[in-house]
Image (cartoon, rainbow, N blue to C red; front, top):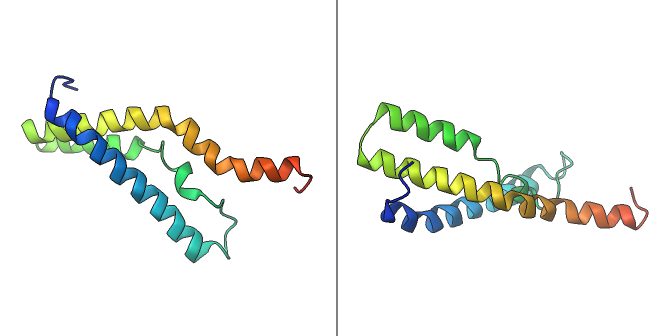
Length: 109
């Protein structure tokens, strides 16, 4: 990773925002279409926030197959995003568990 690439750091907030939006909307769509069939948590998308392993694998493969400054920048953005999402993952996952925890405290299991 090249942490001195200012443009990569400028792209990180957009990447994080779009990734967050995609995970939350994807979770909402899954809840809408499969919520009656599967027992899904109400905020499914939040559970997916920290799941960045596949993105890292794909971006490493891209960096190897298409070497160059643009692929290096994409790699830097995805790595920084994955690290930040791992830090935020605890908060996001607790958003998924909060309704379950409150139901368990109330005696409903």
